[in-house]
Length: 293
Length: 327
Image (cartoon, rainbow over all chains, first blue to last red; front, side, top):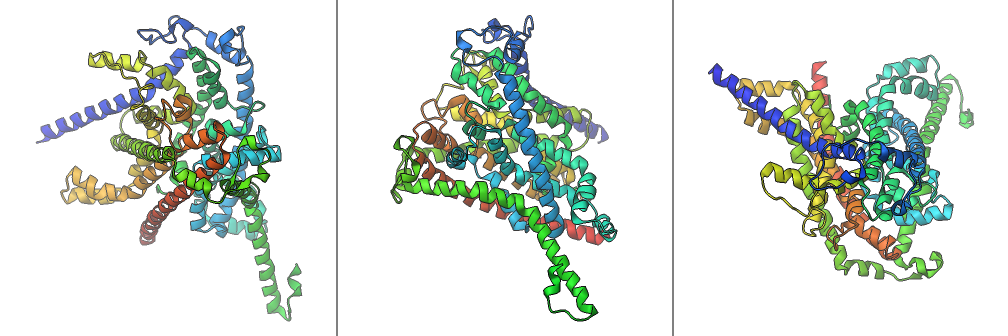
């Protein structure tokens, strides 16, 4: 009896590790392929049979893409050498600024919702519509509106749209942290004469510091990788990294996989670092208070 | 404060005057908190929606001079949209794509979460590997897929080696497969999302009902079916709804990889609206189409929100009373 039970337990353990390992390979292989291609010399970008380990590994793709080390031949003329670094700067400015605005005003709103019910539960859910309706349905009028305002192809234009579209996440996520702060602290502060604004900025926000950082990084993931709105709103002056990568398709007929991969790795690495830092908070960001502990 | 304008006499009224001024201060405070949201609504969202409404009733393309002089055409644009078979097919494709990828993400995510919700050796490292696909920018997913899926590419090669056959599927050029290829990419990309929230949901299920069922002699299957699954329902619903809505809006992977092709094989709603507006420059038709899609999506979202609210309320009741009983 105990024999069969322990044997069955061992069988389930083996099955568990087998299934998880297979999925781990599926999840990891494309990422491995991207990284390994970025280190391959051009003859190995698409050869038959495929080459799984770069031999010898080279940094030339990175030098080319990020530093413009080599003169560009005819095929890559449209991609000027220093562009990716400029796009990296654009992406950084746009993503961090819009995320900062979103978290700052989102957390203030969330405080109002948590303590003063400025938005009813129904309104809170309606807020989610900003996120749930596909953005494609408004991009054409948005681009005309922006061109009338002179916001087309500017950082501010993109920052404002990202601010709007990420606000629901910011409000929901920071509210879940604020709800956990006991009210007694604020009541004590109020009795001691602290104003409402001081309570927010000097008591509540510092108390949920780690939650704010988690929310910030969570929203940074969304703004960093956004594609459609950036594609519509930016033209030539301001392009973000995803747009820069997609230019490889239009401008180069020959497949320059190694360089695409070197650019892709540069876009992905910051995101993965951010994601892994906040991995324990991801469920909270996504679940709108539906997962209780 | 200005509360003194009220007819006041005596000490008790001074207290009430203070209450009034306090209430005013609170109202002002609330208004200030709301200001950014109101400003974004009035300054950004409302004009955009009004413009879209204007364009769906006025025929205008970029070749026609100033848009504010466009001709009023009533419901012509909508008639045009509803009689366009390409639009109908785009709806069908979008629904099929969203349903297929949602179910795929859910099944894989649930399997992984169920295998992982109890601590075991290596749990942390598996978790990290499993969330990586979600942290890959969608455009990067598309370009990496291009490197992996061409006919003599590594994926076909690996499958050939593993199965000992000459596996040569044209993932990218076969029109019957293209949409499925995007769906597979969507599943690869977003299974981590379903996995994460289902894992959190499974881990958050209280132990007591499961232990009670074990003592009563329930089998593992019975516990899963009659205890864990019902308790998990809100989270399951959330995983399905959010994934479905996001998949309906999927644009970057489909566009970067296929631009709607081969032929019209991957022309989903976002792609078709994009092509109509930015390649055919039929702004008005695009706007009318957008309006139809928006109304459809608002309907779907309102239904989804209704379901989510119901689940959340039952959760509030469940956890609220549980806490009350403990005290």
